[in-house]
Image (tube, rainbow, N blue to C red; front, side):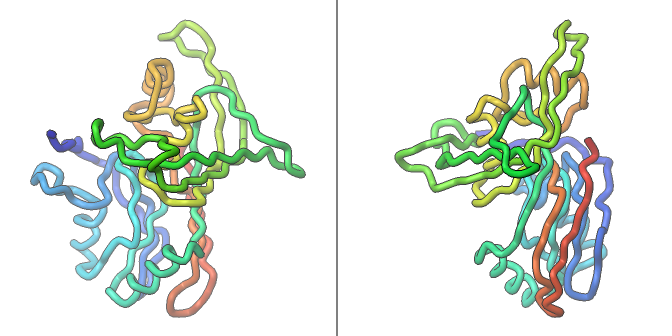
Length: 238
């Protein structure tokens, strides 16, 4: 089993909020959250941050290809308090994504909402994939809101292709959850290297470039010291 070697990432981490207790940052797509065992995978969010914030620890992670908001603790006590909020499911995360095809949901007042309930398990015979497994999978739920449906012209495919921009709220936090759930309803996230089809892969590369079109756009939590409700928004770059 050969470890993934991350290509160099020239994009910078942007600090969205900073105080003596924590940071909120915008992670670029194509940067690991934590350095890998392989020395070629030294560059990461954590590796970069500890150059300026030696006590920084990550409270959660984003996949390599996912961009957007990450919460960083600046000491162990704060990390513990923030981790409890994640464990108690009082932290709300909202993602923006572009999916292949036209996605529909149920009309609820002025919103079009969909719900995916599909248990997820490790695909032990196919690392690093996860899989939908109703026998051994852990309960996994995601909610999405349709933001916009569109048609775009693919010169390579010589035809127009349907896409949908959605807002995702993962109710549970399983590995690869949003990517796998999207693929399970036959609407993979454009740019996904694992859960895809040939058309979605070609379309993403041609129109949007080599990145996963998944962005952690909003994070809501209580400040562990002031008890203030923090609602950070970082708009998706796509």
